[in-house]
Length: 343
Image 1: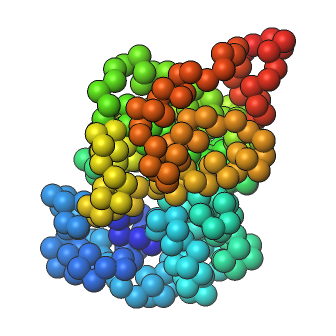
Image 2: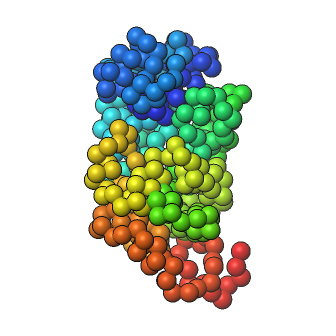
Image 3: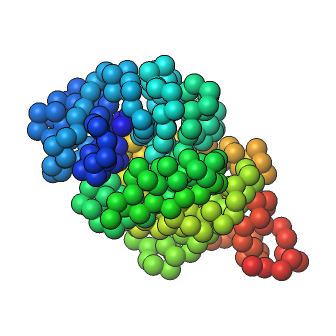
């Protein structure tokens, strides 16, 4: 497991307790995380109060952690995946399966993380993405959770199913890697907006509208980039969006709440111990939308609040007062097909 955040720790604990592996090793950049796992079977920095599986061990040596592993899980923050996994690549054993569980886009190149892995890892390494509605704390607590594993070759996705599936962690398989990764990344932008609504004290009507139209935005951009539209109706799309936009454990929603209450972005970020991926993804989404001629009004307003200091209440007003139009779902382009049959 490459990355000692809450999600990486919860998945490493799941695999260690499931068994079937000679060993499960977690690599972390922070020495205190490594020491905490090895000495006390705990990661109080990122998953406080969790007693981890006794067979789980940690290492601060990336090469040592990866060397000889049958499965390597990439769970570093999106902006760090290229650097970390490029260092890990030379230590990979032949035939090792690499699974990306991070949710975001690479900010500089505006690409998905499986594409980053394909660029930095040795040729021919099987790569899959695991995503879906899954708070780390609830996975650690063994609460029923369903996610999806996607790989270009269905057999690779099925291998991931076998690795991760337990009686409480159900893994479905898919081949639309792009759609699964985009759903996991873009939902964080809508979750920021949902938090802003809560911070403003707005009600359930506004939240329901936001989630529905947010899913439409995610689908439009995803289809324009080449993803399958039905992917966004599944666990990696609608499922993850509902969880992240409504759940109190969502870092992105919580950040949005603070912004809705009037706090400045820099002040909120300064108090966070973990990454809120939606901040960088908002900028990336708007840039991709402009590049591909896709209309993303919610993401655009989120970016205005984040990076230009626009008051959240004004952003809501501007969304509500946009030009009236027909509701058209999916399609990938702008909502201009008023004469077509609506679905």
